[in-house]
Image (cartoon, rainbow, N blue to C red; front, side):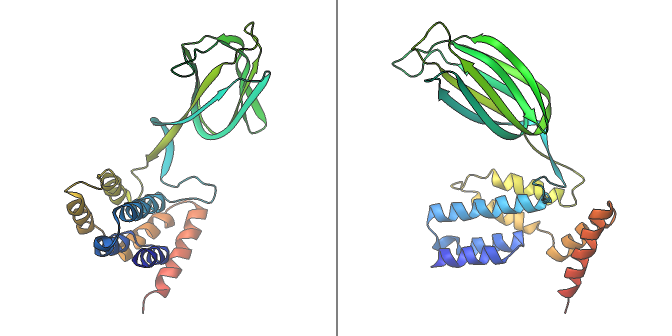
Length: 254
């Protein structure tokens, strides 16, 4: 019942600091796994909102960067050839293909014949490699030299001389992780929130870290005004958003 109340409360509240205070009050009554799940939900939603989400899925104050790589991992067996593997992904700047020495602890692996490796973006496509034997135990990397916002990776495999023997392939799509813009009016709060997220839930300093964060929580009304001021100094679209937010804020004043 308390868990349900907490979820309903979180859905109804957009104030990060208010949510954390409520979480602190209810935490003694929650199971550990429930409390941890809710805590991470509060932080993830707070980080998402402070970065300024845009309708197209990007952010006003965060952008993908090669400095913070993340990995999308895939693997498959080439049981039937020819074989085509396709995967759509966002913010990719490098591709790795690996043919492990072994499929598992019992079976060895085989070389694979890569007919083509290409990427598709918009109405264009780019060939990265073709007609290449991928040797077992080897890894092949294909840097893209920039971050592609939306691409489709396509690998085409054909038979080698080892007919009847399948190869096991591992793919890593290396993705640019988000880097926060210091120009964000909420940048100090966002940095504090990211530090709080690093707190191990079972740490003896867990409650103390939350208290320290809450002590530095800015007034939500003041923070909204700062954000509106920032928008009003921006382009025409940002100015319109700023006016809209200001009108909504004024309606809240008794």
